[in-house]
Image: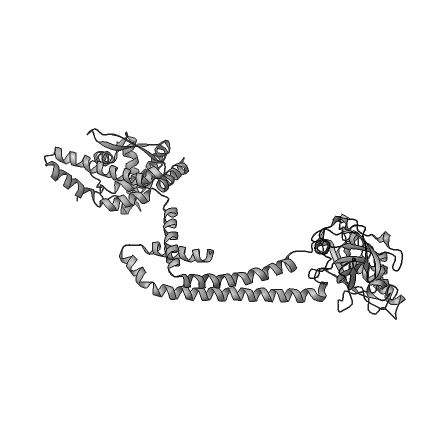
Length: 113
Length: 415
């Protein structure tokens, strides 16, 4: 467990959007992609992915269609809608601001105060 | 775009439920298969790989349900569920339902009746054109509305504040139309009455000030719409007909418009007759008796730009002239203005106080009904403790249960 980071609430949606932005993916593929781009550092319960996917489709950020996977199996593929692309940009900026702010806050030394 | 996606999702969910569940099931199964493929590649047997993949996936049923909720539209779906359940529960205890509905119906009914009366008498103005500038004249410290006919004539002709002043009195008379003679309520009115009130005829014509030429010179009748309807069955040929009123021949000139029934809210006369014919109607001629205050009320529209205070000053100057000129007949001649609909300040405040009291009472009845209903519901809640405990144990959330109970209560109140 020590090598894994806990996912903050709300960050799963952002990760999914990012993963899908790199190319259409089915659910399991999303999971693999997140693992890959995070250097296997983020642990996501497999089943928890699906409520998030359906929520994003409902919000019009993703669209889904059935297709055939690289394993020659039927799978549902997700891709970003224009709205999803916009949301990803906004959330990425927001996250970077937050991360920078927290990092600089945590890096503060006694003599700087 | 976003809203469109939402509605598509909700609509699909409501109308193609089984297809959506099927779809979801397939997608989750596909995920497990893909994972199993990967595990198989790492050297596991197929059966073991699939078993492992299923374990890794986690609670299949739970995620499926969460995914389903994520589709949205839960509000409508839950509402339909709750409504169906509430209906079943209410039909199962018809006694409770009937008592609850009956209690509410009584409370609400009483309020509706009282409010409609109050609406007619207090909240709505009199049903005549431009009611806001129509004022009745009251006399003396007691604010009585009645005047003598000569005083009315003096007020009418000497004032500079009103567009015109009309007078009326109420009496009963015997009407004989050739068949079925009967008593009728009559508004005995000054000739200019309809002109002052800006009333237009519904049928035929109305009488005017120019129709009056001294005592008993104007044997005319104008019917109210309601009386024309009930007594003459909407017969348009009634105009010009001669009928016997107190055994004197009178000509029916026309019919007043629907909704106009004089200027007293709680009284509806059958027809209108000119005041100069008082002797034939009331049995005595008081047109010249300055000391007899038999005219029920005098009223008129203020001229544009004249304030009530200016009008009162104007009337009082006429009053002091009358006091000096006829000290024997006219006592204190100071005047004030009031709304004519409830007979001015003489009856108005009393009626208003009574109606407001009644409204309060009806409000209390509704309150009592609600309190009764509340205790009824709480008694029932105590009975249903077991049911609720069972549901909580089965995993229903508190909000979900409260929502179901609330739906039930709202359903009762809607019935």
